[in-house]
Structures are given as structure tokens and as C-alpha cells.
Image (cartoon, rainbow, N blue to C red; front, side):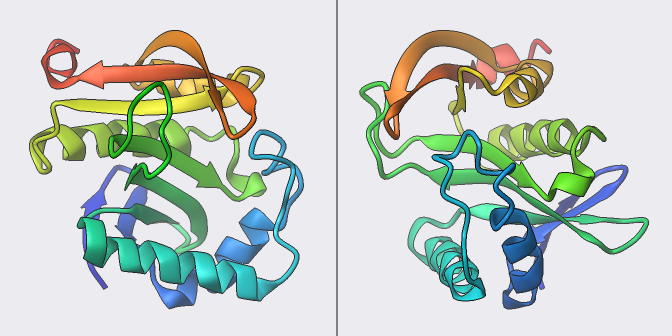
Length: 178
């Protein structure tokens, strides 16, 4: 198991096959998918395929999402971190997208913000990225708040996955001023 980083309350590590039940609990919940196309997973094999895809991206891209574990309990909280985007959004392809997704019982506790701030630090200091981007569905105020609290700047409205999203970005130069 490769631990990527730790925060005050989280262990952030590579996604592993043993995260399967946590992934399924998270992604089978319709509330989690309200801003993700309203298409929750219906069987655990779908979660298994997602984990396999992420683990392959570690090999192909050198980066992908990471699992969040709550230090106090050892519980799976969700995922965080980067993926190299294959889709073209806002006329960009291959950029590093910051994201996070949590099991519902862990919403509202600040874990997404804590992990996003740690991920930004990792992206700018360890990966030496010049820019980090994110998108959030227009109605997803919780995600918009996380991105803004983390220092990303809200930009224009862009179409992604059939819906309007806000485009967020943060440059290394601006991050160093935070």
C-alpha cells in the first residue's frame, strides 16, 4: 500500500481492491450521483471495474484518484486527488482535474476541503504542475464551496457531460500567494 500523504484527519493513499465495498456504498447512493448524471451504480462489479481503471491509470498516466481513510476510525471516506482528463472541456484535454467524492455519512465534516487543500499542495510541490483545474455542476453548492475554500478561482460556465458546470482553475503562482 502506497500512502500518498496524510492530513490532520486523513490518510490519503492509492486506491486498492480492498476499497471495493466502500466504493460501492458511495457510488450506489443516488444522492451521491445527483450532480454526476443521476446514474448510481447498481452492482458491485461496476465498482470493481472503476477501481481497475483507476489502478491502470496509475500505470498509464502516473496519477489518478486516491482513497481517503479516516485516521480515527480507519473508515473509507471516499476518493480525492487528480486525474488526467481524457475528455475535452473548455477547449482543454489532458489537464489535471482535482476531484473528490465521499460516502454520504461523511458529508459536511470538511473532509473534501481538507483533502483538496492537501491535493493542491501535492500537485504543485510533488508533481510540479503549473495549473490545476476542476469543474463543479452549477447547482452543486457544496462542491463549489470546497473548491473556493481550497483556493481555486471560479471562471466561466462550460458544458461538460451534458450539463452546465463552473470552470475552476488555480495556477502555481497564485497558489504560492495563498
